Image (cartoon, rainbow, N blue to C red):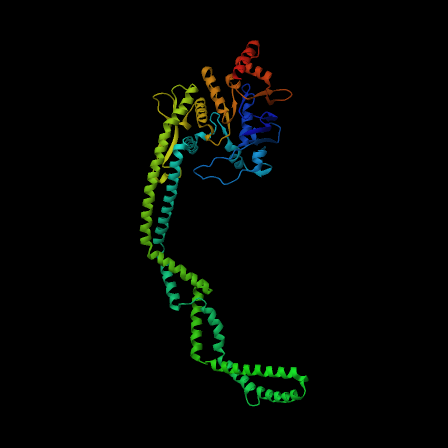
Length: 558
């Protein structure tokens, strides 16, 4: 909902504020007074194209600011629900947007003080406002939007069928994706498959074990230096346990310390330490003897390990550089071969699953089409009744449900939906977007809006020249319908009809002044000024008769 606007240097508007009611706001004024400038300013706020010609002569730039209170949009079945939480600023202080357009035609946009773009305006404030003027872009002329609103209006009957259809549509898409994947695999490059078989053969010929390469790197130095190890072990053993070796010499020392210990215990610690050292050295000698016997100095063992390491390093050069990568390459190649070998069977299963999913989708599409077809006459009747209220005679609205080729089915169904306008009894229906008369399309839009009520995402409806060519009973009907619409939307109406103007909750007058300079003024009217403006609209002048009539109209409206 639009809370307020500040407009500066747009066309003849120098600086003004506009604060519409949350219900129905009417804007009146003489032809050429500048009402279009006000609407152009609003268009700039909702992301429509800017032109440097909109800038007031003599000014360097125009500026339009607005505060909006935006409702969180209802989720669209076509896109899924949004998980974004509404900003706290949106709910408490509204969303403040500002758009500046310089003489070069370039725009600058800020949203709540942060830089933004024109697309951000269109997606935010723009999505909450529908400009329903003649020949304006209107969301209700968009077939996707028409379908969405129709589904919401008939949600009780349509929503379960639509949910079932969308589930089946998703399952069918997944089944088709699996068929596509397997068909692509079955047509894989033969060279790639041959390479995979070659990789498996090469690695299988070596048959590496996990950890084997590391074990060989650890063992090989032992076998390469076995002769050296054996010689050094023998030498160390002889020096410890051989004739005149360390053990023999220490035993002699031990005898001397035993004799000292029998007489003088002051060397007790040294005596005990030597005994322990002798035991340790004897253990070392025994271990050296065992080590000597464990060394199998065999050229064959060395050659076996060297050959094995060379084989492992060969496949590492081809498919590594590490053994982990060799194993990963082997696994990928075997999976490709297995998938290719079983592809025909898997493809047959996938095609059968797709056929089953397709059958379920066709059934769900039929169910959804039937649900929509059941809603159509009630919807047509409701809209046509409103059109009748608007004195459109035998004109009617029809909803066309058009079966689409299978390849054009989407998440929203197997049919296209379009609103058709029947100008009169016996005449051929035509697309709503093709209606030539601005007055007719405005009234059809109004009828649709009343019927759809709170089903749409739009908060604010702006009607420009909806009363073109309207008078008499039609004017009264139009006014009553607009007032009904203001119960569910914020309605802003630019009107020349006093019957409409008297129903406004707020009334703004647009006037052009030539002194001291040419300027358009937009001002809210108090009760007295409003009576005078209604009198002018009734009679083209303000006198006792027109004022009395104006007061009568305002009193009956209240």
